[in-house]
Length: 171
Image 1 (cartoon, rainbow, N blue to C red):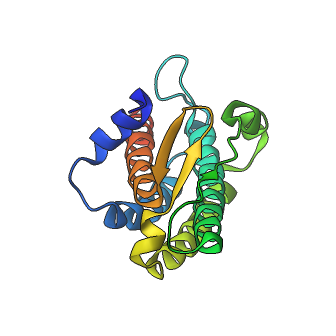
Image 2 (image 1 turned 60 degrees about the vertical axis):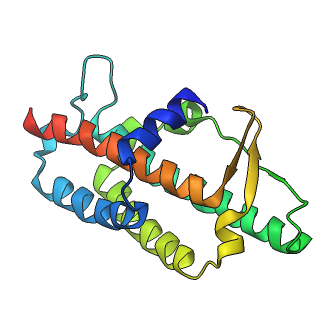
C-alpha cells in the first residue's frame, strides 16, 4: 500500500469511518468559533500549514473526494455488475489548489466543508454493496482503491488534520 494511505488507515484503525466523518464538521465548527482571529495563520509546526490553510484544504478535499467516488460509482454502474470497468481517477495538485488559501476566509471554508460533508454523507448513505466495492485506479499512486477504502482514507485524513488543528488551538 502507498505509505501515505497506510498512515491514514492506521490513524483510523478498526473504527467505523462514518462516525468519524460525521463528527468532523462539528469539531471544525467548534474550532472555528473558539479560535482567536490572530491564530488562523499560525502553523501547526514550523513549516507546517496554518489553521486557515488546513480548513481550506479540508473543504477542497471534500470536493475532490465527492467527485472521485461519484465518478467511480457512475462508471461501475455504466459497466454493469461484472466489475470489468476500472475507472481512472483524475488526480489533482493539492499544492496548486492551495495557492490562494492564505487569502481566503477560513470561516467560509469551514461553512463550505460542513455543507459538502453533509451532502457527501447523505450520498454515501444511499449506496449499495456493489457501489461500496466499486474501484478506481489512482494513476499517480499506481493503486486500485475501492469506494470503501476511499471513505476510510478520508476518515484518516480528517483525523490527521484535526490533530494538527488541536495543536494550533493549544498554542
